Amino acid sequence: MTATPYKAISFSPGEILTRTKLNQMTNNEQWLFENRIQGNYSAHGLKRTRGLKLASGVTTFATTTAGGRAVDVMFGSFFSVGCNPVVVANPCGHGTGRMYCVTTGPGSGTNFPNHVGFRIWMGIDTGVTISLQRIYATVYANWIALGW
Image 1 (cartoon, helix red, strand yellow):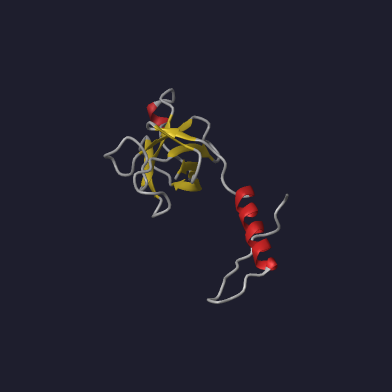
Image 2: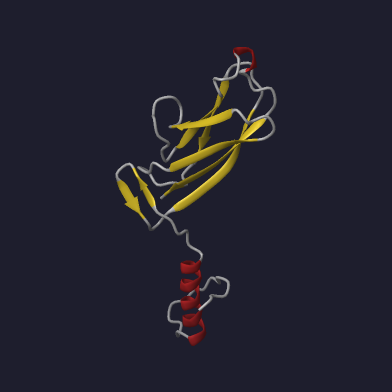
């Protein structure tokens, strides 16, 4: 059964239940089931298949004469306290063929992303000579995070 679009319903005190509202509740439940995130979180000793959340975005890295640059990405209150989301990031843009991304926890004190956010380090392959190890143009990192 394919659900029709979700439609909010409400009940007033003393209101008589109608077939229409009960059918809409059933339809809403089916719609939620069909449109939920289906996935498998398996990291840091935890395995979860329910209540998962997915976040994604693009981070901008400005030009620099250094060998790379770090940018912190914050989740706000999107993920639950205690969650260590699995984060994957990759360089995107012209001239990123020898660039790579490393993700850690926010700031410089933790190894893994957490419910607060994460840090992306955009670096350049060490096979490039020292004089070329810099970001000459604005580049981007696409990222995606799975947690709860």
